[in-house]
Length: 376
Image (cartoon, rainbow, N blue to C red; front, side):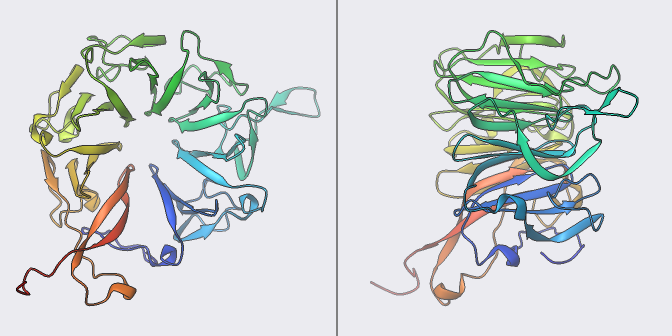
């Protein structure tokens, strides 16, 4: 947006207006946008090289092109932001990583020192290939680990999958056993979800708030089925810092995990859920996408409206009032129509939303509507 002020209401990112942005990703400290030509723009915190270019400044408030990925042979189609590293994949299934790397989360082989020992580079500011032997379909990033879904439906991971403490520098991809024919993956801070083609949902990782949906708070090093979703046809999943959601083909949302600040949307601001429960306050809204941030969530409807809930400071809910609420509330998009539609009647319709640590991004398009004030 070009400044450093916090925003309580939806505001356009003017630098990106000339481009056709097809996807956005919000991290804990930075943001990313992908354009239809495969170019990638980043902005935000840059102390660990998370913007994909040399860290000339600690942070940048204007989106800038990641030039090393702007080669004509590289077309980025999907990306992810972790704690302080980023991943991307191009249309040829090649994966890239940059940013913090002390746990091996960027997948770079350790460098050999003069004394013969090996050590990982702490930061990797310029994107480089990772998992070169894998043909990747989707990338996902956690606090200090990386997960990818390959074209053959398998899941691979590297980095530190648990909260730092017992430091394991696992830089080489390891296949997650027990998962076949995976359709979609989602990764929170230290937990992971995998939706299989048969509609079953599996989870593994940390579970202190029930974010695995297994009915307890025991961590799992191997995937285990998520409970309470049998008989449902799932079409999408999302994982936040310590909570998870699943979306059905009927537009209904199920949520579980940490309930503090109301991020689950159940109306209160405290109770955690160890198994998925339907978000009754969104029933009937025909939800088509949900994004989970660190402490808030946003749901998009088929007709282009947004509902946000959770922690409200820093303006991340977009209400104008920095309230924390477990009640999903519609986010107003009070912006003028695009210049080529000046004077027309219509509204902005949200197509995609991304929740970060303390901010939210969305892609919206203008939809013309008849002027109800003119008699027909």
